[in-house]
Image 1 (cartoon, one colour):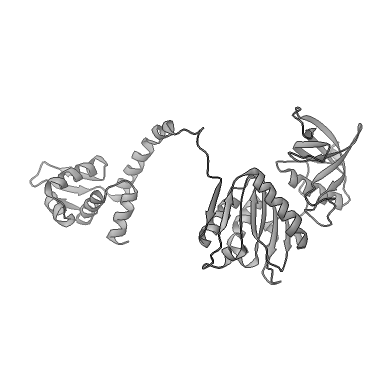
Image 2 (tube, rainbow, N blue to C red):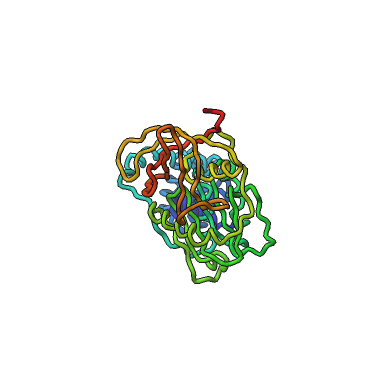
Length: 351
């Protein structure tokens, strides 16, 4: 690394430019004098005294004033940098005390113009996913996020993947999503994560480094919901299903209602009977949630083929209990009889 680059890096670590220049001079000479530092950094001798005192306070150099002229010795860089880091950690608690976390609000919208930054943001959101990923992107861009998708699946994250502009040749690993569809036509790049954040852009913004197009990052729940609704109604049905994961072993509790619907649909398609334990309350109410159990006799969904939904975004259970049959949707359901907060699927033998 060039000396100028080292100086720039040290200034980002909190040193002034003159301090960084003086420190590099001492490092280069190993043991030197104030006069040499003054001459090589082009600063006055009196100012050089102030600067080396500050470097000594930071535990980057040692000053031996028992000899004439005074000698300056560099502390080994590994120790010096460790000293700097320790000083930063020492004020962390004080800074946390000053930080008003209650008034802090993370940026909820941003425009991303750099192709590289779009890919970086896609990867970071996928890496942070805890329960659900819904993604549509061109086949030629798939390899840039494939490792992150695979890691998410290993964490148990439910993933729906639509590969657009598919050429029929791009390999698609079976372990990167619960359900994969391909479509030869172009479509917007769409990512939603945990129903809380996402990215939308044109495909050109992702594929063409000279494109004038851009991506939009958003972290508004109602926008994420609207984006998914558009995706599931307009683009997902156009795909050809090329991979579906095997059903998860039961019993299992799901954080994502959509994931629970997907898994129940797989079991019903295999002719298996699935029971369910849920915390539910009447839709559009503020009643407390109550735990109910029953047998899932039907699933309304458009996540995995064959679709069984009656309208584009329908995801619900038809549940049979000793008290009758009712429908259950996810959080904020409005057409079903109940909304569910927690869902545990069980095999019939567990009842």
